[in-house]
Length: 344
Ligand SMILES: Nc1ncnc2c1ncn2[C@@H]1O[C@H](COP(=O)(O)OP(=O)(O)OP(=O)(O)O)[C@@H](O)[C@H]1O
Ligand SMILES: [Mg+2]
Image 1 (cartoon, protein in one colour):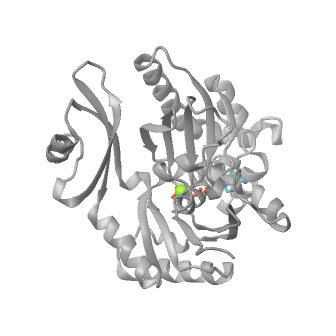
Image 2 (cartoon, protein in one colour):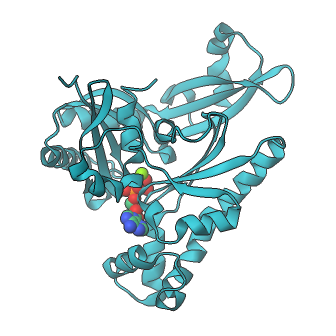
């Protein structure tokens, strides 16, 4: 008998992704999964009609997926929240709770009474009398907007977190506990770059560029319409042996904005952690499927780079396994969100 299932819902700029998981005979099982294009970039707009578009689109997706549950975990895009590791004086839990708002005020460019603040102590700071704290500040207006959309879609919200936190749950268990990992989530409009030290999130940066910039660059460089440029992007990507390398040559300068940021973050990490080494880059997001991207990142950074499979420890019906696996990087956040129910 299946326990109550739960849906992880990732509302992106390009598409909405959902993964429903349940527990069957002590195994976490995929119950349903699906994605749907986000019409008219509605998640970005702030008029009530945009909200209705998102509500209706979620409704259509869940109808097509034949979901069994109405309980969702969702996340806010990293581009709309502030995730920082800050250094504070060594304090007791009680002292930290009393002073965190004041500490946060120095790092968050919004009035502190307009954000929801979450934090976790990571460990000792750089000097003997400080400690490091992970701070996540989410604007209340955005939380309210997401809550309103989900309630209008007749859903029960079990939790709202951030993309970077949810993706931690899909780090392959085959990687050693102590590994230092670079997580790169490349979506349509933005790319999140995170460092995870021994399974703890210690750094997050969002670059406002992603797959849609690659498509635009191909269209502009080669004079294609956007749908055609999108097809070429998906077919040839950064593979410079195809079409005389023209597609790769159009994408590379745009991708270099992301790559430069990755390299800067690696330099920062090495300077601050001379004893430690980042051993693996894990790629997630729809644009992680770009042909040639993995080997490009690996050769530019010198770090072993793999496509993250969020379904590693989830039972997937063999009938849909092939369909799920050809798309798994896209569903990483939605899977991480649903997994919240089943893993600590
Ligand atoms: N096979 C593929 N090869 C290359 N790019 C692809 C492929 N499939 C999808 N994409 C790109 O992935 C992007 C969508 O990815 P994803 O669904 O992760 O974005 P999103 O979550 O909606 O966007 P964001 O995170 O920026 O809000 C689009 O730019 C799309 O062109
Ligand atoms: Mg996304």
